[in-house]
Image (cartoon, rainbow, N blue to C red; front, side, top):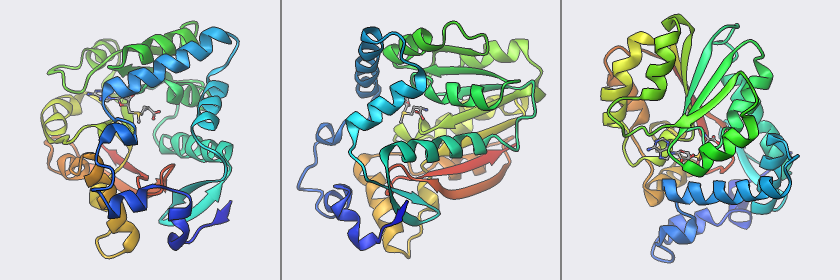
Length: 284
Ligand SMILES: C[S@@+](CC[C@H](N)C(=O)[O-])C[C@H]1O[C@@H](n2cnc3c(N)ncnc32)[C@H](O)[C@@H]1O
């Protein structure tokens, strides 16, 4: 892991130039889309890879996808410092942040409900780290659900179902709540609320409706409100969110939602894209 000066970021990332010249390339498809269909296509390709190599494990599949997408060294961030790392090391750092986000929360017996889990890579990592807990994930991308089931279908502690934040009721969560004590249910998201242009209604109406029936919420998400307005890095990060039309209201919405008490918000725990880092929010 080598330090990277912000001044040198453009040598390793196309984003500073795109943010500073949004006219240059304003077609989202050119950047790689962010809608469910774009994810579904990626998951279909990964499923094809698994079908041609059925012995591939979930970690190997993720690492193959990473190596296909990016060449080492790649830029990352941690706590507003930038670094260059090997593409495999980047995955290790992201896995460590994921496991650490639930370290103070899980002590055995809980069910973690991961909303927008993609094909469930995070469920595999968490199930390995927390062998006494169960993990239920949901995603609207059909190929993600199918791939997750192909990879984890024989594991008792992992289940993946269709799920969409935009639904009025969350059947996935209701199914878990029907069987579990509220004290044993933890809601989790990683990089999935980000995909929505605003999360205000989802948080203050749908999620808040379940708040008194779950113990805690943990989010590893891209949190616009934490980007400083007085640093160059913070301003570039704000520009990135604006350019991609990601939400800018997650933390604000959690703070005003009835029944939700935000207990901590930790900025930039890891940035696989240094202009779009994951922050950790916890609520009770
Ligand atoms: C960046 S991926 C993150 C996936 C996974 N949580 C991870 O960290 O690898 C964003 C995910 O959000 C999902 N997503 C997009 N819109 C959604 C919605 N309306 N409801 C639930 N999930 C959604 C996408 O299908 C995709 O799997």
